[in-house]
Length: 276
Image 1 (tube, rainbow, N blue to C red):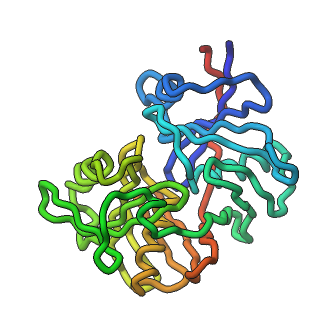
Image 2: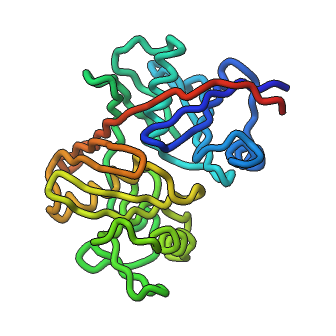
């Protein structure tokens, strides 16, 4: 069977998008891992599978699979790529629209500068929603590690995140620390691990080691998680420029029960056909 796919990326976070509305496609963890393999497959951080919406008024729904074959609950960079693809496919007409993600409905609209704005939902800091099996101290968590006691914040953005403050965003041990946290029993579902360096109340440098994909060039939900933690403790304002290895995102949040908004680029790289 020939499988039509699209290669896309948002700030370097790359995806294989498969439109299952237009062709039969049943995804399995094994197939997702094969597609995501950069040596034996197409290669990507995540696979996006587009399907018909279940609820009236929504344009479509999508699934997210990590490159190791595990399912994911939220993906901000992927949502922007979904928005671009639906415009290319003429399913969206340039006006704001809603799609169904594994974490719930996601609103998408074009910005005047040509990028996409995504409503990412309301962050949840409750340990049971992350989920996280630790008690906090004034909102911060502590975990013994080979690098000593690690202090971090935790938040759910529809997927679990741990966020560390660092004074050295170029620390070569960040991938190893991220992998250690991701596999720790304190996070029963694993987590995405962000390392944030403040450069002022409106500017953050960030690296993210993603659950199921390793360190990526960008992580949209990770950028939201970092801003949510920093905003909670008064370290950033309501609009923050987040600089990741692959590009720049803008995160807006005024706190309380208001949804976070993420703005950033989306690009279509190429389309191809895979002979399964």
